[in-house]
Length: 203
Image (cartoon, rainbow, N blue to C red; front, side, top):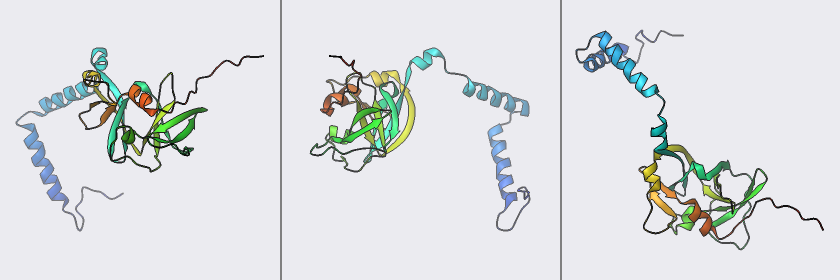
């Protein structure tokens, strides 16, 4: 492997080393090497320290996803899973907000479009790439997503901020994602797929 500390044609490594030295001096601010090392070690300990139980209780996780350019989020506590779409079946003569139905681990879910539920112009007929499956005891509903941005942690008071009246969008998070109310999603889906197991009665 070539020695990257040696200059080579087309790139002036001596200039890079000089800039790094200037940056180090500026950051040091007249501190000794021991003081700098102690500050770095203290900062490392602070960053590595586990979140206290009290601090963790004040923040909750949400999964953030997108559909037709809009950003949405739902609390992880209300999600069964985020599943890739592989067996989505459109429903003939069933209009928006319904995208279709799909199975996940043997259960049947109705998939809806949050844009259509919210009467947003961004409603899309494109087949989603993912479905955010909701954990609801009475119905099986999934929310269509083109992209999943990941899970983020937000202050509990932000999630608990209630609108003046019950709404599909509970609040807007600092990153601009609309936090969906899972109850409102299932209530407005209008097509309920009941996947609960029932006892078979013998005759």
